[in-house]
Length: 117
Image 1 (cartoon, rainbow, N blue to C red):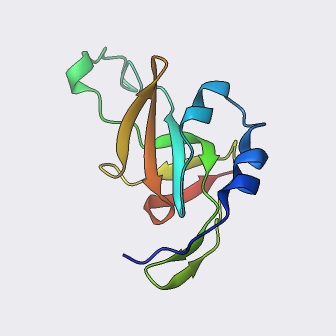
Image 2: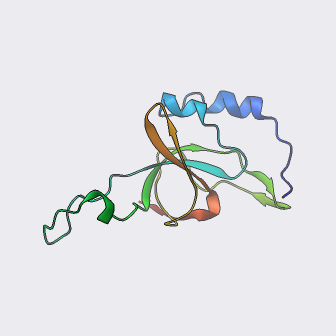
């Protein structure tokens, strides 16, 4: 995988005003996006309470941090999402990480399927 050499010092300064301070330890590179999953439903529409293991992994999340884009696999990638966007992403994509007891998912931008308006 060929990724461009990008000056990250300006990028790091830009994201220091990010929405959540704890995510500053998670700086997404290239076409990566840091997401915070939205809370999964505790009950079904018919009122059945779901035990922890029966709940589906949520596919909706809020964008917490966005990489700078650049050249990835020989193609120019322009980031299409921004901090604060609510998105739907591929169910089993990304890498789950925990920072200061908060759980995040780091995905590639192409794993994001839609922005919720």
